[in-house]
Length: 219
Image (cartoon, rainbow, N blue to C red; front, side, top):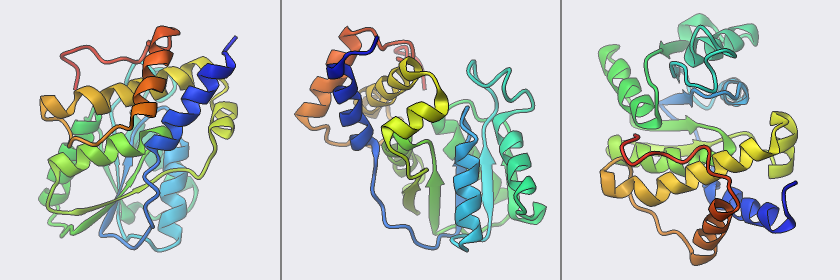
């Protein structure tokens, strides 16, 4: 049973992770691979709104997606986009990335190899990882403008979609931890974390929502 305080703390982390960027047309979209096909759906929705001419879906597999997406996250995203009418010519697949840093680096390299001129990137992620993805992209691709996007969902709606409340809170805690420890490792830019957010994160750790915490050597 998840306590009222834990839900309140999770909501604070959820709200902090949202970047609230105003969407605009960009050179390319990056759909960051994960267990959540909703990322592919949001990317398709934005493509159909003509927010960008080209999509890169990026991601291999992880412990969360190995069984659900055996052909790789990026490939399953591509298949979803094709089913929804996106032409194959508008999709590139980067199948090797296993973390957010690799998502950015490998996608950047792929676009350079294809000769794509990139001045801005619409970065599509899960709702609770907007800030983490943005901070990583700003560090690893500083010469382009980064615009963050995700499914316009509340925490309650996301929990209902995933159907595993404890997992969602674990993932929120993991995303927040990376914002705190990764800047010193050079993995992302540093962002100010308000004291109430830091306190909410600490309480959730004490309550045991820790299965997605990174080890000191993770990236």
